[in-house]
Image (cartoon, rainbow, N blue to C red; front, side):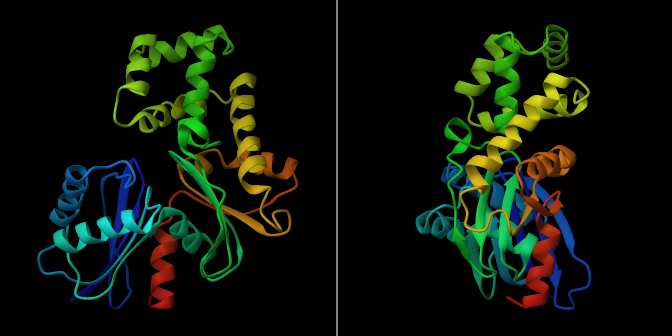
Length: 286
């Protein structure tokens, strides 16, 4: 049977779906994440082989649509396309696009609007119903990524060690994760995936939203994201703003509160883009 392979690739994990010609249901699986901008050839090959091993041997893949973190330039997309063709292969089209275009297609389909990602990293775009019209660059967790898991984790760690986080909450945080200052500095400045580590600390924030300081910390991050990354788009207060990603999904109530306070209209909020991408490619037969 012939299948279309769709991938929603984040830095933490990649969600894959095999969709048959009858478009009835999909075979789904997840693999290790990949940031195409940061990954070397060996890591890329390893992830592709992991995906290939999860695909049944009797499946004939006719198309691949890959939307990924770090797919920022034609050169990067070309290298990833080559890796997909060499490892998984397809008898037809193999397309590689940014995770941001994937989010826009998932959330908005053929409609105009503003699409945002709030996951390990953050990003946003003005989408015209077909292509990205404008993108304010996220700049990564060092220079930007406001509202993301990495940025929230960075704020949590910094506030804990600089004495801004309430003492009892800070002590509970360090005890729960078993972290010392040395551990954190090593993971942030010497590891290959600092943003992933910082985002892994966010569940603590979610479980302590009852604390006014923690609630304010999250609210401040979302206000910053909306002000710096959404407000500059033309029509930002008249167009619907939709979100996808684990941070948007799990903190949806605070996100809606921040948006309402700043005069934005929130559209859809989803946990991950894959359902919408399956719908988009099934409906449009692309």
